[in-house]
Length: 92
Image 1 (cartoon, helix red, strand yellow):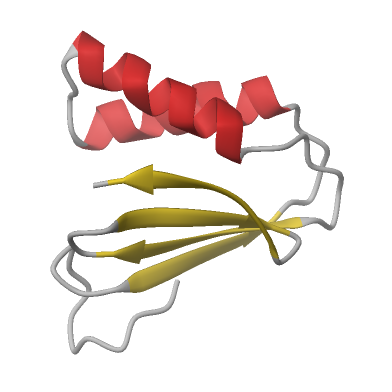
Image 2 (cartoon, helix red, strand yellow; image 1 turned 90 degrees about the horizontal axis):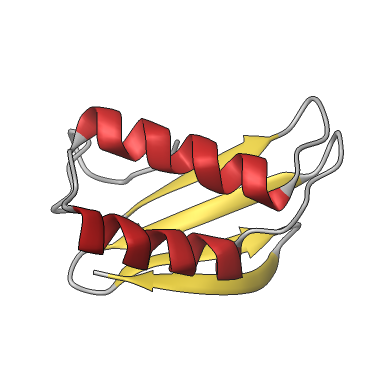
């Protein structure tokens, strides 16, 4: 997790990079991500479906040792990278 803010906040840019220790399918990543997001902030069903569509576009199957990085910018949303290559965006 990276941010240059004094304290982490959705009001400041941040990046989260995860290197996977095992293989995961795109669908597994989408489902788990939605579960984690819902646990933090319950989304209405319509918003959840929209987010699911963005995640299904942005995520790829990952193999052990591969990395996904999400870069968040307030007012813009998040950009997703798999192995350093842009794969999708989630607008705010």
